[in-house]
Amino acid sequence: MKIGITESDTNFQYYAPFIQGDDPSIEVIILSYKTPNTADLESCHGIVLSGGVDVHPRFYNHDRIDYPLVQPFNEVRDEWEFQVFDYAQRQKLPVLAICRGMQVVNIALGGDLIQDLEEHGKHNHRHSKGIDGRHQIELEQYSLLYAITDCQSGVVNSAHHQGLGVLAPELIYSAHSEDHIIEAIEYKDRSNQPFLLGVQWHPERLHVVGGDIQFSKNIREAFLEAVQLKVI
Image (tube, rainbow, N blue to C red):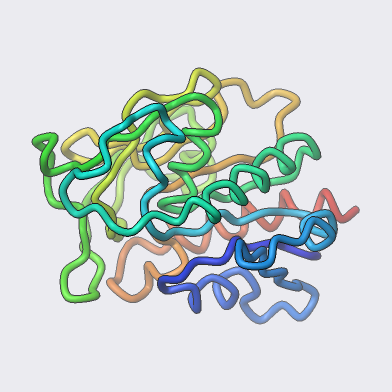
């Protein structure tokens, strides 16, 4: 089982251990924007789109680049990850999209972003001094995420200052925060579609702040089950 994880320059060390666990049959392929390699991509049975810096606003038709908390953009990474997601869609590969990764998916499918949540009148969803925040989320009862976690609500970690704005037409939200920020997405019509789950939190390091384990362990297991079907 080969799983590609897009490379991030922040907290990347958590992703491979989260995906591999203690299973020696799982091989992680690092899909690096620094040396984009289509051969590596084409060997993958599933894709994880990782977190990281803001996507450049030009990709979602915004021209403002001086919003609060703006970071240096990485358009090379942006371009590569849109290619990775496009390939995953065409090959019907399972995709787990985490934080920035969820935002990449929404943009790729025609949605956009709220450039800064606090400026938009929402709560602080950022981390503080390198430690993730925590907050409650509510799940949509008939969603894929609800089926995976078997719960209506719970606690997740939080480390972002942007969020989804206009949701792409192909997607629905499957969880939201108490201040109504979209916290998870999936396909609106899941028939004949591969596994796709986007989460705004970080399941790969949820254990660090003691969030509800089903929002980490159950998601990993569901993703791996979908990937295993591609291997077979």
